[in-house]
Figure 1 (cartoon, helix red, strand yellow):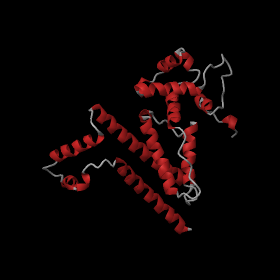
Figure 2 (cartoon, rainbow, N blue to C red):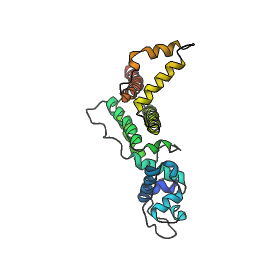
Figure 3 (cartoon, one colour):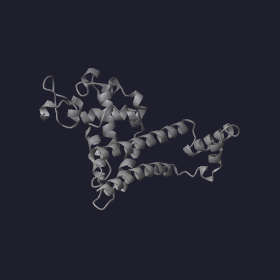
Figure 4 (cartoon, one colour):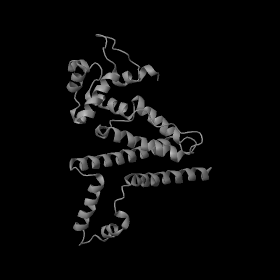
Length: 251
């Protein structure tokens, strides 16, 4: 199958620079980057729920119907906004860098991007990455695992697993931060209050494991939220490392 036989959404072709303007109709007066940037400005100012075709068109000083000459649907616009907001992936793996620190840095890049633009977590994931930045992130994640002995599909599954954990962690912590801000509290204060409330609810009854947990001195808040992130990531990478050892032992 030739490239000409592979159909791509028009907005993706525009994002990749594969289609500069339509074959019919007047010339576009804006670039797709300007349209996406306008959508991001709305999301940053008022949240993702405020992003609509009419609102973005207003930001650009054009009629709503004119915006459809750039993106065929709101979901396409949201996908391109998220791709632009993620930006370029972290620095590629250096020749002397091991795969674990490289993939850990790649994963934390996702957490950083979502913390920088919290509205990203609300954009529906409609399929594999197709935007320019998303494909670059995919390339770099796969490259971080090059030379490990993992098969191609295993490298892909690994970055999907790690990325899923990173998105979950970033979403969880962003949700908690927003909830704390709504109550004019710090995340640490909200956490401390939760443990106090849980202790009261489970002081009596069939909850010995929870009471044992609460009695652990380590449950006191120390502000090391990212230590929990690292614990989970390390356990995932331990499993991947075990698979890599098995591949090497099998020859």
